[in-house]
Length: 159
Ligand code: 4NP
Image (cartoon, protein in one colour):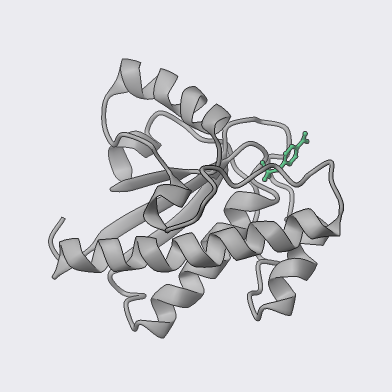
């Protein structure tokens, strides 16, 4: 991996959780001065929202924490992502099962649950889509905490 790393965040729709994780993590990486070394992207396991911008509730929740995700456009996960990304980081167990199905056939980078990089009492970043505003704040809390842990873990490997 040397002094470069690539990270792909994966959720279901690529309009709520993974674009938020991408934006928050990009900010952490920039604050660490590692934007030239760490490549970041996000995608969804479904094809439901391809080409769409983030959900307005995610835009607002991220914006309140100084993270602008308005430039994002949703794309779908492909098996090629397992060959090109060093870290394939998924939000929940369903994402993990879906990506693992493809990983079993394709090989490449083994997907991991995002929250394993943090010290949260939770295992998953829950799908906020059908819930209220609180769900989006909770998603941001979980992502900020795990994102800091993920960056520390990558820095250890790159050191
Ligand atoms: P995401 O949230 O996976 O965090 O982007 C969702 C977005 C859309 C849907 C479900 C979850 N949907 O059912 O359309």
